[in-house]
Length: 200
Image (cartoon, rainbow, N blue to C red; front, top):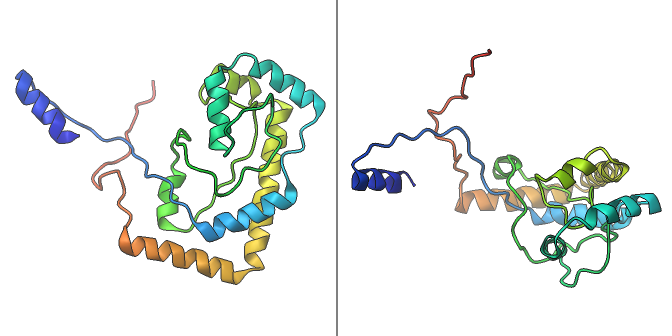
């Protein structure tokens, strides 16, 4: 990217200066941890939403596009979106990847130590990130029920791992084998310091 910018500057008789402020690595999975979490998630089942939650989510869903809704189901491993305001199933572990899941600094953590994440329903099916619909649902009972359920899934997974040292060992082996073939390279150059912003 830097060379492209330099080339464009040469072609236009201008100069270019670049500054890196941040960067994130992709999230790498860890199958032993994912299988442990999936086991616990399936035991707990989907988020226990109520009729009032579904009615609220249906009103939000009416403002969404068919494309947003279909994409949400694809990410969950389902191809034909039913008329479903809130996710009422646990997505399969072996679902195909469709991308579009955003970026996170947890990606860098996953290169340093075995990591697993829970994706739990906290909003109407098809809600795109960074929209007014996301904001409108952020403090609703739907979001709180989803967060509490996520905490239960994480706690159950932690208990599973404490009681299954062989799973932890397998997770570490998978992680170490990946590091040997593809070592972690921080996307932020070592000379970059956090920006200092003067207070007004």
